[in-house]
Structure formats: structure tokens, C-alpha cells
Length: 264
Image (cartoon, rainbow, N blue to C red):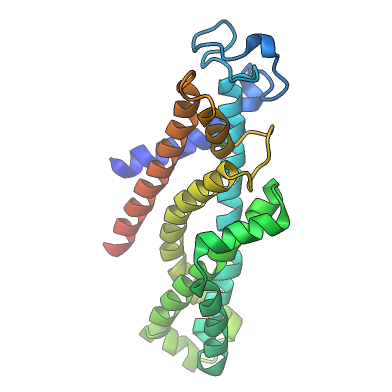
């Protein structure tokens, strides 16, 4: 039940944010008129009202979700491909190669993740691509360590030792025997990581280091709204609620996948 509910919510959010702007009669998320400033929810043409700049809140919420989910998906895909590959190769090779790779990853992990991300975001400047690059700084090492640990467990299995004794090439062992067996663990970790990335992106945008205004993201919507929160508290509520539902859904989905993997 939880898996179905959380999975359905995630799919609905993705469809709403990525397909919604093309099929729903939404207004532009930017370029609103100050004459329509801070309209209350339920106003004609503005179901959730407008912000202090006259921009439609529903449109900004959906486009902001598109930006936040794009960051989350991109960072985790890069982490899965790069970090997963590094970790799997490191665990497979073992010996000095494994030690060297792990020492480099340990150096990256030793830095406080949020501090490292903020520094990188500050150096690169606020933009969507730079936010993705900054957030991969802690995604890749973390995924690599999970992939290495899972690979080493698979390496001890009798069927893998039999494949090595049979003379199977390394690439066949890696892609046919190791990768399919570590993907469930990585998927579980990335579902939880998705929630962390979205929250961190929101924090960066709140600090002005993520996606720059006037382009919406849930983080910078909260930042802009908190300046007039006493007069228009609903402008903080909508993006904060969107963040809560998204993070909770990914967390529950990740937990469900983990429980499913552990029962096998």
C-alpha cells in the first residue's frame, strides 16, 4: 500500500511538472503585472493566487517543481553512472587499485557535504547546470562507496567465483553478474538521495546560490515569499508543501524498495 501510494505520488508529481506546462492552460511563471500583485487564492485565472510580483503561483509552482526535480534526477543519474561505475570497478579490482580509489573518495567524503556544495555553488555561480555540478560533489562519492560495498558482497558468491574460474572476461562478469545484483541497492539509496538532493537544492536556492530568480524553483519561491510572509503566508505554504510531499514520497518509496530487496 505504501509502495503504491508513494510511487503513484512520485509519478503524478513528475507528470504534473514535466507534462503539465504543455497540456494545462497555465500562465507564464514570470513577467506578471504588479497590478495583479498578491491576489488571494481563488482569484479569476489564478487558482492559487499571485505572488508580490503578480506572477501566477500555480504556474510558478509547477515550473519550479520541474526545475527542482530536474536537479534531483540529473544529480542522481550522474551519481549512479559515475559513482556506481567507480565503486563497482574498485570493488572488482581490489588490491592497490581499490585502496587508491577509496582514498580519493575518502578525501571527498571527509569534507562536510553542505559546506562543500555551498562553496562550489558560490564559485560556479547560480544557474541550473552549476547547481547540478555542485550537488554531484557529494552524490558521486556516496554512491561509489555503496556500489563498492555491494560489489564486494557479490564477489564472494560461488557463482561469481565459478564464472572467474571458467575464464569469463572481466567486462562480462562486471556487466552480467555484478551490475544486475547491485542495482537494487543503488536504486534504494538513490530514492533516499533524491529527497536529500531536492532539499539541498531548495537550501541553495533559498541562499541565492541555486537557480536564480526570476526563474522559479521551490527553494527560491520560499525565499521570495518569506520576505512578505506576514501579509501573504500562503506564498510560503505552497512551495513548502510541495517540498514536503515530494521528499516524503521519495523517502517512503526508497524505504519500500529497501524492504523489498531485504526480503529477497
